[in-house]
Amino acid sequence: MTANDRDGPQGDRAQKMALKRLAGPSDPDVAKILMVDDRPENLTALEALLAPLGHGLVKAHSGEEALGHLLRDEFALILLDVQMPGMDGFETAAHIKQRAKTCHVPIIFVTAFDEDSQAALRGYTVGAVDYISKPFHPTILRSKVSVFLDLHRLRREAEELAYRALHDALTELPNRVLLADRLEVALARLGRRVTRLAVTFIDLDGFKQVNDRCGHEIGDRVLMTVADRLRRVLRPSDTLARFGGDEFTVLSEDLADERAATEIADRLARAVGEPVQLDNGSDVRLRASIGIALAAGPDDSPETLIREADVAMYRAKRLGDVPWVVYERPDENGPTVADNREDSGPRG
Image: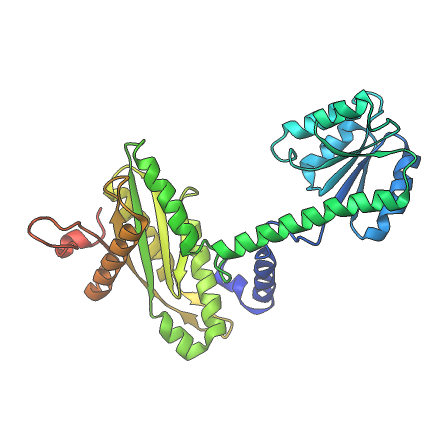
């Protein structure tokens, strides 16, 4: 997304879409029920009884058709007839439970079998959570379906809360809590890999003046644009987090050497330096001060690496004429950050 896409009516739509995505992977109030039966009249009867619940109803006339729907959509519940030609309900349920995407979707068998029969026991073995016997009572059907719809809603609400707790509300980037968790896991992997890991700390020089001059609404748009640009220049395996205010942090794993980390920092600096156009025709120009900390091994802590990258970032800010500085661990003689400007600027 470009800066222009953020401004005017297009920018308003983009912001609304971003806010909608903040609810997490999907809206917890929207749930679909998959009804599977080879007899159209049975599907029509189920549809008439469940429509008052206000949820999406999807029909499938065979096990194969049901599996196709499950590849394309997410469902809160499956009502599955047992006796169908070709792939029967038991075989269909077994396929559903074998797929990682659908293995946790509850299945209620709709059947003429007695719940105490061997066929019913087989159904529980292949993954059924309940049975509804034909002819079913409308109140019993709705009650059982409502229970699983409520469980689905509660699970989605829990996912939404977890998402909000670990992501920044404005940019949708991971926050410092999620960054620290991923960094801890990445450090543990260092003990099993001969590779390098870097934490890069980014501060946007000049951003305070944007808020003071243009207001916080424009400042938020600028932050969203910068966040999107930073995302685009990183590798898919990198974690970009909003650390707070106008500060961002990047976790980069599987680096060959220090140069690989500084090349990432160069791309980040260029991305921040691109002008951000505003809807009044003017533009905002920012500069990045960037600090880089390289992990010495799995015994490093997330807090130590973030602190070291922060110290290096302030060194870059003080120097002013270099986009990034690499933190150097103190030795017996004492320096903590590279003091030599030749070693503190872009390499290569």
